[in-house]
Image (cartoon, rainbow, N blue to C red; front, side, top):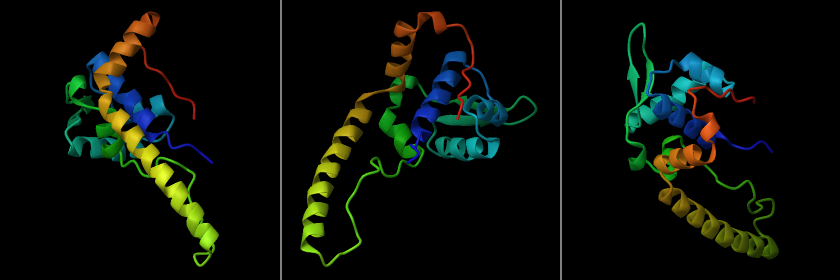
Length: 152
Protein backbone atom coordinates (compact mmCIF):
# COMPACT_ATOMS: atom_id res chain seq x y z
CA UNK A 1 0.00 0.00 0.00
CA UNK A 2 1.36 3.39 -0.95
CA UNK A 3 1.95 5.87 1.86
CA UNK A 4 0.25 9.24 1.89
CA UNK A 5 3.13 11.71 2.01
CA UNK A 6 1.15 14.90 1.39
CA UNK A 7 1.85 16.21 4.91
CA UNK A 8 5.60 15.63 4.79
CA UNK A 9 5.88 17.07 1.28
CA UNK A 10 3.89 20.15 2.27
CA UNK A 11 6.08 20.67 5.35
CA UNK A 12 9.14 20.34 3.10
CA UNK A 13 7.89 23.10 0.80
CA UNK A 14 6.87 25.44 3.64
CA UNK A 15 10.26 25.13 5.31
CA UNK A 16 12.02 25.91 2.04
CA UNK A 17 9.80 28.96 1.58
CA UNK A 18 10.59 30.16 5.08
CA UNK A 19 14.31 29.44 4.87
CA UNK A 20 14.85 31.26 1.64
CA UNK A 21 12.20 33.96 2.11
CA UNK A 22 11.40 34.08 -1.57
CA UNK A 23 8.58 33.43 -3.98
CA UNK A 24 8.42 29.99 -5.61
CA UNK A 25 6.45 29.25 -8.74
CA UNK A 26 4.22 26.20 -8.90
CA UNK A 27 6.60 24.78 -11.49
CA UNK A 28 9.63 25.17 -9.17
CA UNK A 29 7.77 23.47 -6.34
CA UNK A 30 6.52 20.72 -8.65
CA UNK A 31 10.10 20.02 -9.72
CA UNK A 32 11.19 20.00 -6.07
CA UNK A 33 8.52 17.42 -5.24
CA UNK A 34 8.59 15.38 -8.42
CA UNK A 35 4.96 16.07 -9.22
CA UNK A 36 3.05 18.35 -11.58
CA UNK A 37 2.25 22.00 -11.04
CA UNK A 38 -1.54 21.44 -10.99
CA UNK A 39 -1.16 19.28 -7.85
CA UNK A 40 0.99 22.00 -6.29
CA UNK A 41 -1.52 24.74 -7.11
CA UNK A 42 -4.40 22.71 -5.67
CA UNK A 43 -2.50 22.00 -2.42
CA UNK A 44 -1.23 25.55 -2.00
CA UNK A 45 -4.65 27.00 -2.76
CA UNK A 46 -5.91 25.11 0.30
CA UNK A 47 -3.05 26.53 2.37
CA UNK A 48 -3.85 30.01 1.05
CA UNK A 49 -7.48 29.67 2.17
CA UNK A 50 -6.33 29.27 5.78
CA UNK A 51 -3.68 31.99 5.48
CA UNK A 52 -0.49 29.89 5.59
CA UNK A 53 0.74 30.98 2.16
CA UNK A 54 0.01 33.85 -0.15
CA UNK A 55 0.00 34.04 -3.92
CA UNK A 56 1.99 36.75 -5.64
CA UNK A 57 0.60 37.65 -9.06
CA UNK A 58 2.49 38.79 -12.09
CA UNK A 59 5.60 37.95 -14.07
CA UNK A 60 7.68 37.22 -10.96
CA UNK A 61 4.75 35.73 -9.10
CA UNK A 62 4.33 32.51 -7.23
CA UNK A 63 3.84 31.35 -3.67
CA UNK A 64 5.33 32.57 -0.42
CA UNK A 65 4.88 31.61 3.21
CA UNK A 66 2.57 34.06 4.98
CA UNK A 67 2.82 33.07 8.65
CA UNK A 68 5.37 32.99 11.42
CA UNK A 69 6.65 29.44 11.79
CA UNK A 70 6.02 29.46 15.54
CA UNK A 71 2.30 30.07 14.92
CA UNK A 72 1.63 26.95 12.87
CA UNK A 73 1.59 23.37 14.13
CA UNK A 74 1.88 20.12 12.24
CA UNK A 75 -1.78 19.57 13.13
CA UNK A 76 -2.69 22.86 11.43
CA UNK A 77 -0.93 21.77 8.25
CA UNK A 78 -2.36 18.24 8.46
CA UNK A 79 -5.86 19.67 8.59
CA UNK A 80 -5.19 22.24 5.86
CA UNK A 81 -3.98 19.62 3.37
CA UNK A 82 -7.07 17.53 4.01
CA UNK A 83 -5.59 14.75 6.09
CA UNK A 84 -7.83 11.77 5.82
CA UNK A 85 -7.35 8.42 7.47
CA UNK A 86 -4.13 8.22 9.49
CA UNK A 87 -3.90 4.44 9.56
CA UNK A 88 -4.22 1.95 6.75
CA UNK A 89 -5.47 -0.81 9.05
CA UNK A 90 -9.07 -1.05 10.13
CA UNK A 91 -11.98 -3.34 10.76
CA UNK A 92 -13.73 -5.59 8.31
CA UNK A 93 -17.11 -5.08 6.73
CA UNK A 94 -17.52 -8.30 4.78
CA UNK A 95 -20.01 -9.85 7.20
CA UNK A 96 -21.84 -7.26 9.32
CA UNK A 97 -24.06 -9.98 10.88
CA UNK A 98 -21.05 -11.84 12.35
CA UNK A 99 -20.60 -11.31 16.10
CA UNK A 100 -16.89 -12.14 15.89
CA UNK A 101 -16.36 -9.49 13.22
CA UNK A 102 -18.27 -6.98 15.35
CA UNK A 103 -16.07 -7.75 18.37
CA UNK A 104 -12.89 -7.41 16.32
CA UNK A 105 -14.09 -4.15 14.75
CA UNK A 106 -14.94 -2.71 18.15
CA UNK A 107 -11.55 -3.60 19.61
CA UNK A 108 -9.64 -2.31 16.61
CA UNK A 109 -11.76 0.81 16.39
CA UNK A 110 -11.13 1.75 20.02
CA UNK A 111 -7.38 1.20 19.78
CA UNK A 112 -7.10 3.07 16.48
CA UNK A 113 -9.20 5.97 17.80
CA UNK A 114 -6.91 6.25 20.84
CA UNK A 115 -3.79 6.09 18.68
CA UNK A 116 -5.15 8.71 16.29
CA UNK A 117 -5.98 11.08 19.14
CA UNK A 118 -2.49 10.63 20.62
CA UNK A 119 -0.85 11.30 17.25
CA UNK A 120 -2.96 14.37 16.50
CA UNK A 121 -2.29 15.68 20.00
CA UNK A 122 1.46 15.32 19.41
CA UNK A 123 1.11 17.04 16.01
CA UNK A 124 -0.45 20.00 17.82
CA UNK A 125 2.66 20.32 20.02
CA UNK A 126 5.15 20.59 17.13
CA UNK A 127 5.43 23.88 15.27
CA UNK A 128 7.07 24.65 11.96
CA UNK A 129 9.57 26.63 14.03
CA UNK A 130 10.46 23.42 15.91
CA UNK A 131 11.21 21.76 12.57
CA UNK A 132 13.35 24.70 11.47
CA UNK A 133 15.33 24.65 14.73
CA UNK A 134 15.83 20.90 14.47
CA UNK A 135 17.03 21.20 10.89
CA UNK A 136 19.48 23.99 11.64
CA UNK A 137 20.90 22.28 14.72
CA UNK A 138 21.24 18.80 13.20
CA UNK A 139 22.19 19.62 9.62
CA UNK A 140 24.39 22.74 9.78
CA UNK A 141 26.25 21.73 6.60
CA UNK A 142 22.93 21.99 4.73
CA UNK A 143 22.37 25.64 5.54
CA UNK A 144 23.37 26.83 2.10
CA UNK A 145 20.29 27.96 0.16
CA UNK A 146 19.78 24.84 -1.94
CA UNK A 147 16.59 23.22 -3.06
CA UNK A 148 16.02 19.52 -2.40
CA UNK A 149 14.55 17.50 -5.21
CA UNK A 150 12.33 14.69 -3.99
CA UNK A 151 12.41 11.51 -6.06
CA UNK A 152 8.99 9.88 -6.14
